[in-house]
Amino acid sequence: MRHNYSICSGILFLFTCVALPLLSTAQFRYTTQKAAVSIAGTSSLHDWTEKSKEGAGVAVFTFADDKLVLNGLSFVVPVKSLKSEHSSMDNNTYKALKADKNPNITYTATTAHLTRIDAETFNATTTGTLTIAGTTNNVEIAANVKVNPDKTITVTGSKKIKMTDYKVDPPTAVMGTIKTGNDITISFNCKFIKQ
Image (tube, rainbow, N blue to C red):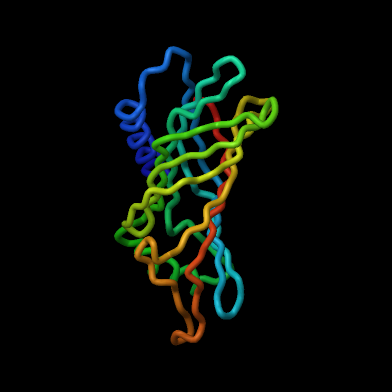
């Protein structure tokens, strides 16, 4: 986890220093570890889900009057932390995602816009780079952001993608008789704690 955390910190440092103007209001750095991430899809046999509780992220938030501003966000999930109920499926997933050469799925936000829903809740729209299996694409990800009574911040959401957009061949099993669909949904539930 320390290696993944250092990747997040490095990406966020560059993002904050290069891509963002200095803000006059105070900023707070938040981190999350053991964040829940799942990848869900379909196959010719049944629907399937791979889950991880080893996501690690770094975010910078600014609190100003009644506004919450997301100034930077980076997130990493180790591919081999994804698990299903079947080890054979896990191995096929790692192979398809080229886990040995590309051990992490990463997302780095380059822009973010938050809209207040109520006193504690915001809708967030971020744009950034999502890297899977060594291929990076620009994507937009929507999320729900909630400021909790203990001042932690919970971020939840999901993103639908196509495996082939990341040069991933949908996995097959049993001599190719079981085929996985191209469309998958990545979901996340992260609690960020102020450092």
